[in-house]
Length: 286
Image (tube, rainbow, N blue to C red):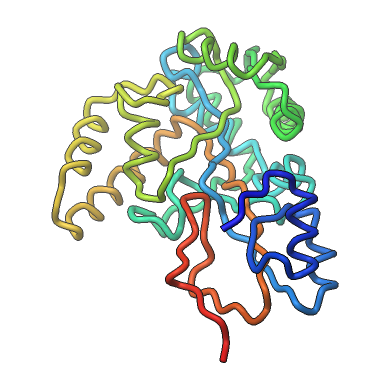
């Protein structure tokens, strides 16, 4: 195992055969495809990007308002704007990976539906829209999302201003409850639903930036965390994810994809993700 922090150095090592496998940038795809000794796969990483709401502040304490905002967005367009390529991310309706325990296959990404969005705003008492602020860190991907979101919300009568902050200061403001809307990411060392859902939505979760405080959800997340029956635990997460999806405490957008290149003669039974490389699932072809 070699530790190479510089991406260009790592790419050279892969191109020359000095390394057999490694994570590279999506910008390296053309070089990889041109090398007959290499192949690659693109897989969702461990970081989910999302638009968050302070659910304790009006009007974002109303799930209809949150749903309306989700219906105003074309998620594929958002991904394209954010990553400058659809290859850069994998859309998701909930912060549980498709390959992770607790994934709910019945949930689909909210589609763009302007009429539905306006209808929900009217039901919530905001037929004429409202003004709000979105807080975002000074990162190109998230700034791109913010600009796109601003245009989407204008279509349904919401005047959203963008406040750019340094990342550490932004987190402090979010934790203190001083933001209305924000763009953030969440990650974990493995793909089990508990590692995302408990931390993001339990009232005492370590990254409960939405300030979600729901007694039913707390109880279910605690129950799932200690349940030892796999089938029962999975059933609990189907309930939990449906509830989170319906209440739209935030808008999960996409998993940030990772690219893994490897020697064409190296058989990889399962492409790794950010949680680690599993060498026992790799072997050389005969």
